[in-house]
Image 1 (cartoon, rainbow, N blue to C red):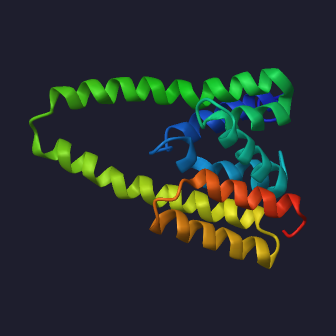
Image 2: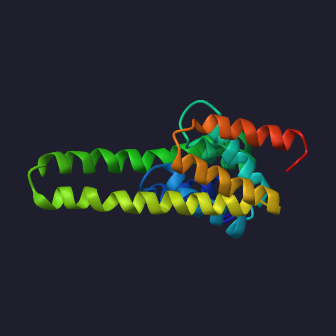
Amino acid sequence: MSGDDNPIFQLFWTFALISLFAIGGAVAAIPELHRVAVDVRHWMTDKQFADAFALSQLSPGPNVLIVALIGYSVAGVAGAAIATIAMCGPTAVLSYFVSRWLANAREARWSGVLQAALVPLSIGLMAASAWILGLASDRTWPGFVLTVIAALVASMTRLNPLWLLAAGGCLGFAGLL
């Protein structure tokens, strides 16, 4: 079996590369995770991806849990472990060296400019994540409208998002969505 046919090998290299571009955390990498897992490798369907993301966000712990769920769906427990290690390992090493480098250059003007430039990039990646998840999970007009309303309410008010989540869950449980 060549490396290209080995699912463990595919998981490791896929998530190791994605981890290096996940500026803003695992949620910022959702569009690329979705593209690879659903469109390129066909490891899961849109619905399975949206369900895995929802489960990873509802579970206590880091939001990188979605990677473990994708890995598990591909290669069981070994796949979950490899995917998690590949997603966290390279980023942890890179973060360590970059933070030491930035600590040494704290007084330099370019250091602040670089850090300020990463903020809109992170926000843009997270907005792309929201868009991809909306497309993957909202298959009906009522679901789409509810998502838009919830996003507007969450961004324009101080209402705890758990209330929005509870309302959506109740509407789904009642069969209205």
